[in-house]
Amino acid sequence: MRSILILNGPNLNLLGTRQPEVYGTTTLSDIEEMCRTYAQAISVNVAFDQSNHEGDLVDALHAARETKDGVILNAGAYTHTSVALHDAIASIELPVIELHLSNIHAREAFRHRSFLSPVAIGLICGFGARGYTLAMDALVSHLETAS
Ligand code: CA2
Image (tube, rainbow, N blue to C red; front, side, top):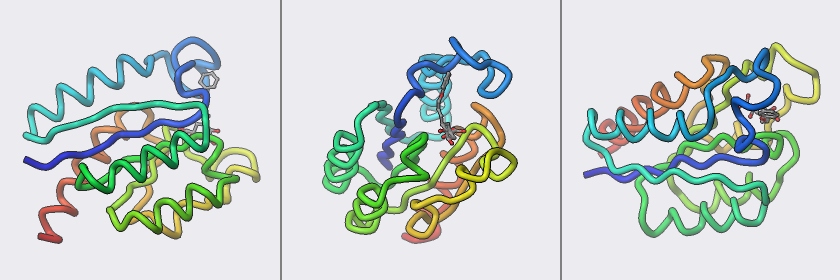
């Protein structure tokens, strides 16, 4: 069975508690439950994690190299700043899908630049929590095509 990591970055632990007009009312725990239920339906193993710390996200990507077939990454604001995450994705040689709840291109100009898109296999943004299951489908389909 395929194993995937869904990794979430800074402030996403606050989902559902602040700025519902931007990020909705679904909490990260709700999203985790949704992903676990969907993983059973499509027969994949899923690990779900969140950190507010850039280095911890780098470590999680390195660890995924040994145990996972691919990664879905919502790196939050580090998307727009982190050369370290860019380099980690480039180094692990696993397919990584960049994910955002909001449409980053319809928001402030500083969110239009992503350091991760050039090393991700693709980008899903603007579909809210549903983006997570869309990304799971996209990753599994990519893995099936690649094998
Ligand atoms: O749309 C996304 O998923 C983002 O990755 C979310 C990040 C933002 O910096 C990116 O540009 C786009 C922010 C996550 C912060 O989430 C909060 C949730 C509730 C209250 C405050 C922040």
